[in-house]
Length: 190
View 1 (spheres, helix red, strand yellow):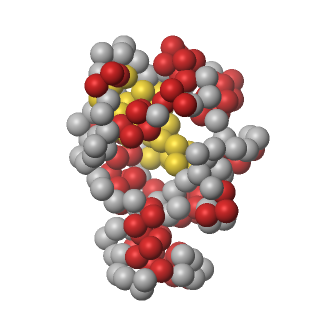
View 2 (cartoon, one colour):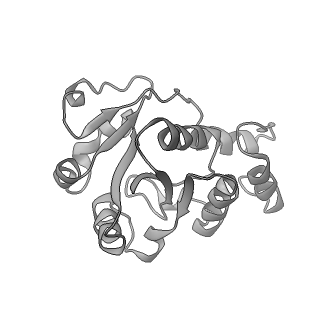
């Protein structure tokens, strides 16, 4: 079974994340996509992150009716901040029958050389890349581990959602209704 790992803070999860994950699960050779909720990405300020269990719950709510999308809290049990190479080593050990690959935006591919042990990622895993505006990935196009996809380009960000909620703007359709209800029930991002 081929599993695509789509790492993110999901602060909050939004329609853009879901479209990308659904595209990867249905328009590539992946059998499933796991949305891996990262408690702390080493490139992000942890103080700006909402409670990791709330972010996990929003991801679960957003994907509960999806056949090929799963949510993983695997990084909740690992040392923080989370490094992709360490998480993959843990997953390979825990699920020996699965082939894991990475899903990332072109903007992350541009900065891949800053990642811990990025050479191991390139040597051992396929990386499926979705487009991001203004990301020059020309140096990677010919790399055998890199697969550039035709995923629809989504210019929605969690920062945009958080700021809109803070300003009392209507974010319906940017996040699933059930996720929006969860956010409102907890008075998040105000």
